[in-house]
Image (cartoon, rainbow, N blue to C red; front, side, top):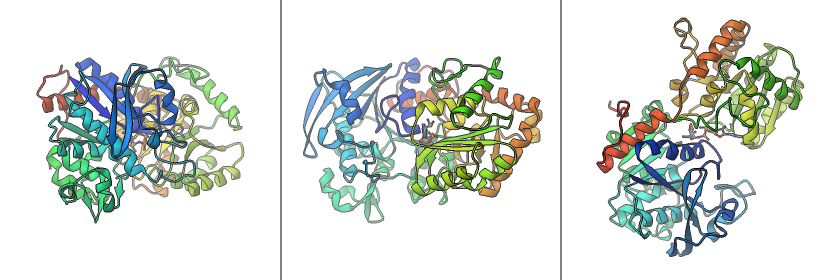
Length: 491
Ligand SMILES: Nc1ncnc2c1ncn2[C@@H]1O[C@H](COP(=O)(O)OP(=O)(O)O[C@H]2O[C@H](CO)[C@@H](O)[C@H](O)[C@H]2O)[C@@H](O)[C@H]1O
């Protein structure tokens, strides 16, 4: 089966968050089911070197008035189509945000062009290759299925929601500029409170919708987590599935990780201490026996990092230390830095995005904290499990279903892998941190939690099979089945 995945980011080429991890890992995991994926991604400025000496596969003469070229390249086992539209993608800044910290003002146009190119490919524009199925991700690529419907292209489409908070909502006056007829400006398609909403268009026109965990798939049907789209999702409920993300166990492997000072596995977990010391030294923290907590995340309200700023004293007064790596809302960055200034030698904050430090933090920290107010799946807690960090997480979304709380029953069943808290408040977080500090004080109990965490299996194997089954049902091609099919969401 041939699949066209359409995405605005993909690891290792361009990443701002978990979306890239998933779009980079899933194609590799799907190959064992006979599924071959080609991924369409914009040729952003840092990626243009990859196409310098390649001839284009085809030229698009008019994608919403832009000329663009399509290149095929293979990188680290990923087959990519790079869409080179220099006026839209060859510029400074990140995929979504300009150097001035604001969204690129023409994001509506940049991602519409990406979607239109995807639809053209799906409809057969490429000589010798046409996908059996298209897989889109989040609002940036959700318009693909709208364009496909307008072209009467019948190739089935799966749309994955990684985060419903980002919807691609723009003025309805732009409709003709994205080449769509007035008929799509209806509640059945793009219309959303008088505006146009790219994600809604995708939700209404994709054949199947997936959310990145079964819990999140249920949550988004409620007003609390549905972000205004709960009604749309309810209308499409029979097409909505939840499949939990996996992790790339080659890139996130404590035994092979090139970024670690000391590599380890379950048997040699005591070596983790060396990473902790190296980390504490490099961040200017004291090298005492207290537990080292870490957080690697966007510093935003979603991720609850303001709550962590308020609860950090619980860690410090309990004898622990804390390192935070992240960037995001200026206010939360300043709030965290101000707390760190109060606790020299015990708390450090690194503002920025740094893949290597993220690995080192997982390699050395005793615990990773993820106090998200909502979390579709979450990957950091899965990396934490694999690296023997005992996670402290909010009981929401994918966090609720991937971490087994260390309550009495789970402890005696030797199943516990971390600490959950609910309600998701600063007080709730403080309570969970106290529980973690208490557990750390018993080395035997802590070691057991670490080993149980490391035994949890969140590789892509099972989840990729669930995607393969969904694809197989849509294109009516059997795939190799090893586990039961994905759970459909019924009532
Ligand atoms: N400052 C920093 N430096 C280095 N690395 C950093 C970093 N900040 C974050 N990261 C990395 O970015 C990724 C974040 O992924 P998450 O899944 O935790 O959240 P995100 O909200 O981006 O993803 C959304 O999509 C994913 C994928 O579906 C869902 O799991 C998630 O719930 C949803 O919100 C991880 O690989 C993490 O290590």
